[in-house]
Image (cartoon, rainbow, N blue to C red; front, side):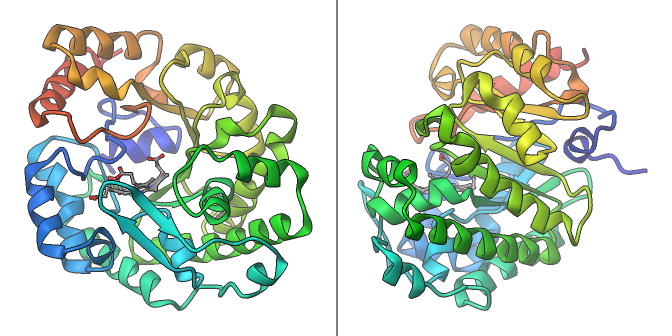
Length: 344
Ligand code: CP3
């Protein structure tokens, strides 16, 4: 019998405990990460170094009793593999070569046999060889809309220009989304072949798209990726994190056929569960800033998140990534609180 709480929840089974992992669980809040990051030189150098990327993926699991590993990489590896120049500038974030019309879309590569993807698959194989079977292994990609927003703006921004393009929907925007769907399917299938057991699709900027356009810009491209993956792996566990859609998560679940929806902080999980098809789980949604507060505040906030959310339908997580200013001890306080209340 399998005892993997994460995969149990994602496949509608009964877990032995409430699974928990954290978005950005490998990252700058961990001194051991900062050390390896310094050795690697650059962030991208770390993403494409299978030995170091494997080590960094495993670091949070050495320190904490978590239920999942998430591949260490970045969503912008996909446009990089498609031929766009990418840099991560210290203290500024990503800078990506821009796409601004059909000629740029036509010049994109499919990325499928690219060196970046091969390096990521090698990282996956290495991690897989080290994980015990109770730990779920999560791969990921960015959703087409969020990745497209970086391709249009060239960097982290307010995304106003990208939203305008998405709403006006010129042929080149639709063409770019098609190319991202195709490459993302191949990329996830490659990760699955190398050993990941579930995938998360990150649509960090889903909340920027006005509701009347959400089905076309957010949900439909994700659904095409889900179908592309499940064509080869029926019922494969897929978490869709359409961040910021609030009361729209039920609709997102139906439109994308997700196994689980990731929910941002500030949206009540019991309300999301009530709007979901019976077999779909929720993931989230402790506010990341909780981890900067006192022990009592952390314990109370964990209990509030778990209240009214049955264990078999819940993957405990933050509402967004853990921030670099969190003290590693705060994560242990959170885990102890979850274990104390997780039997409901
Ligand atoms: O969750 C994990 O531990 C897995 C690794 C992971 C990273 N980025 C590592 C990373 C994952 C799943 C991502 C996804 C990602 N990347 C998203 C979607 C999730 C989200 O946070 O909304 C987005 C929008 C990106 C793009 C990106 N990458 C930005 C905007 C930045 C700069 C901001 C920052 O925190 O510096 C990154 C850099 C990045 N990705 C870091 C890490 C650990 C920090 C880089 C460093 O070590 O210097």
